[in-house]
Length: 69
Image: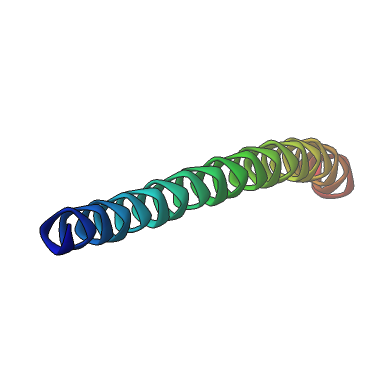
């Protein structure tokens, strides 16, 4: 009887450890996906800012050419 209890206790400990590791892996994957989403949004926002700066630079160049020419 004692041998069965020891086996059962060992199985419970192994199952608990596997469950904890699975949960940690799931949470890590969730955090990584969230970080990727934020990075994608920031990249899109930076691209918009870069485009706006390009337009502004083009206008400034035209004004400078008019002023000099």
